[in-house]
Length: 161
Image (cartoon, rainbow, N blue to C red; front, top):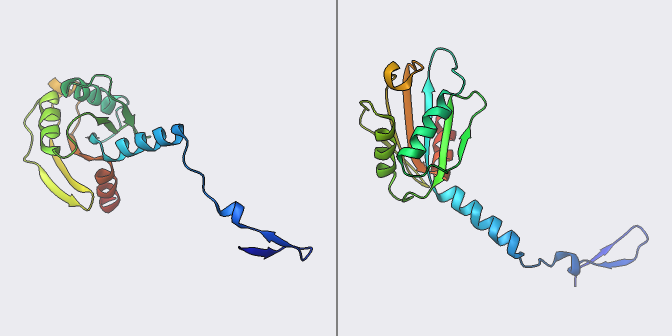
């Protein structure tokens, strides 16, 4: 039994406070959703431009989610609106190349060969292409795509920040 002295020099039983109750069904569901988010396939698109173009990354992300067959998939946009992330998707989390291929086709254009960076959470693939006023309609200087598990993308971003 753990005992602690309080201000009145009385012994206080701490074992009751140390007990951990099992998670509730709601907590379990929340944990499962978080695990799905962290280990699900994500597609990130970043606009490289001399000055921010509001809505551009979001527009490209919408094209991507339709092109990968997930029109209802979540889109998250950074504060500067130059990067948008699609996902987690239902795409195979162990096959970032297929996700990258689908995203490249969704946006069109001629893309560079992908660069693969291994993280301890899995590979991250990156490619880019020059902006194309006819397809981007907003004249981006360059468009970048990354695919990988969410946690791998987080580790990649931390390393390359």
